[in-house]
Image (cartoon, rainbow, N blue to C red; front, side, top):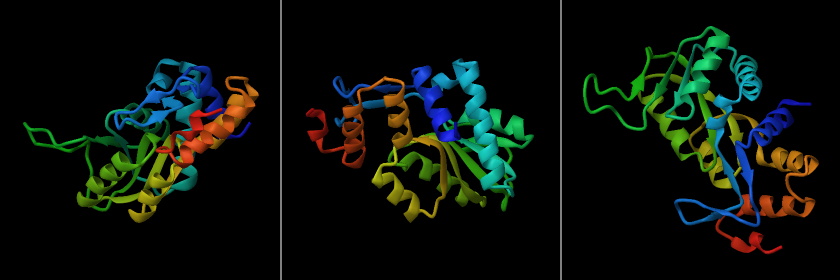
Length: 212
């Protein structure tokens, strides 16, 4: 089984991804969604955690062999960056959502030198806004951001466009297309629900996917 299918299978088995096309979730924006992803649950599932963290480390080694530092996104990417950095014997740190209002007023935690070659570790990419904020903060601090390794991506066009405009390369361990294929194989969803999930991804504001 390749990495994308293996990771998708683990996410489904530990219920880090919920697929509910007939009982959709509501995002903060008000958009109805047939999928909810909580990759924090990986941390409480040792077998899945081993698969995911080793895959992150291998992806960093393969795609960014010149990397010197891993930086996690706050908060969900921090633990994954720490574990992958341990496997790779590399320094790591993380980027806060906003600078501290006391002490040294840090936004970036951990030692980072100008010119350091950095890979960002992210748990989930949807519209990519928070990920790009982290990349921009690191660039402003003088880092050479090589790219991003994320656990899962929906593959939404808005996210793809934002990453391209910001000049950010992302490699996700798995993605929605692979996940729905695995979900059908495992009988988590009916075959006809696959098209509904992909239709949502392609146009989240169009609720016609809710019609069977």
